[in-house]
Image (cartoon, rainbow, N blue to C red):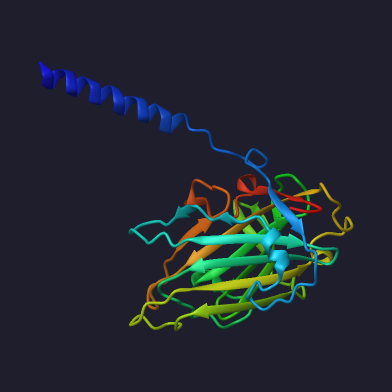
Amino acid sequence: MIRKIIASATCCILAYFSVQAQTEKKYVIGELPSYKVAKATEPITVDGKMNEAAWKNAEVRSLDYFYRNGEPFEKQPTKFRMMWDDTNLYLFYECQDTSLTARETAFDARPYLDDCAEFFVVPIPDSVNMHFGFEINITKAAYDYMMFYKYYNKRDFFVKGYNPAYKVEVTYDGTINNEKDKDKGWTMELAIPIDALSNFGRPRVGAKWAFQAVRQDRNQVNDRFRSSSTLFPIYDIKMDVHQPNRMGLMEFMDKK
């Protein structure tokens, strides 16, 4: 009798969680809390070190959504910060990493197959099938573009001729492409000119833009596959990380 009760209760619990999983809300752009972009109160030197006191005012978010098709992977933590002034957006990625890996060296190639930071942005608070993209690996091989999502026959289209002048610096603690030791991590700092992102004029306090922050984590030199983590959930990695309706919003603040 007890076994029947336990079995019945187990079935009810499994059925409940099955329904919950099927009905779980999948957030779209604007439904999750906006990232509050603090305004920089002093000049920012792009050196990958976050030495300026102004960075203490930046909101700290973690890239908590992890994806990878296939084998298990290590969920290595990433912290993301962002600030702005009248000239630039400033980004800072702080990544724990036990195996620093980067093979790509060419410009506008495939740094996303390495340990890599990515940033997608649209200078409006809406979901549209176009965004600006920046992908840089830990040796500063960069891929920047305008991307049109599912442009034709459900295929994405990348405009590689978009090559804005922006600054990036990287620091790392460990040795790159050496699997015999255990590394600690890396940081990446960027300054992206606002003029390279919008011809609507500079954002005012309270303005909102759509964006996504992504980290690619490759842990084996001879294994091209890597895990991805994002600031806002994308749910289905098979549809890639560029899904416009899965971006979140940033809000430009005067202070934190």
